[in-house]
Amino acid sequence: MVDLLLIAGSAFGVLSVILAVIAVMQTRAPRGAAIGLMLAIIFFVLGAKVDPAAINPIRLGEAWQKLFAGQISLQEPEGAGALPDAGQGHQ
Image: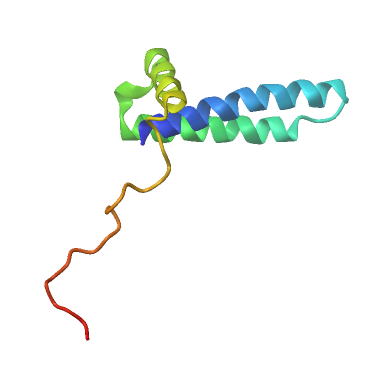
């Protein structure tokens, strides 16, 4: 869970920098960049609330490595949502 929050926070942070550069080049107010930066901060704060020791550059790099290695997935594991069978058959 913390890894996903770190990945989302860093992705929104990078995206906000890109949006800020584009907005300044077009001489517009960087509203989208400000929203992206706020989302990044929110995700990092949520990650810090879940696990305060997780907010560091080493853990951030490890989270991205896990993502690219396929160890992080948003899919539910098989059988996680299944209800336990009580042994009562329906006819």
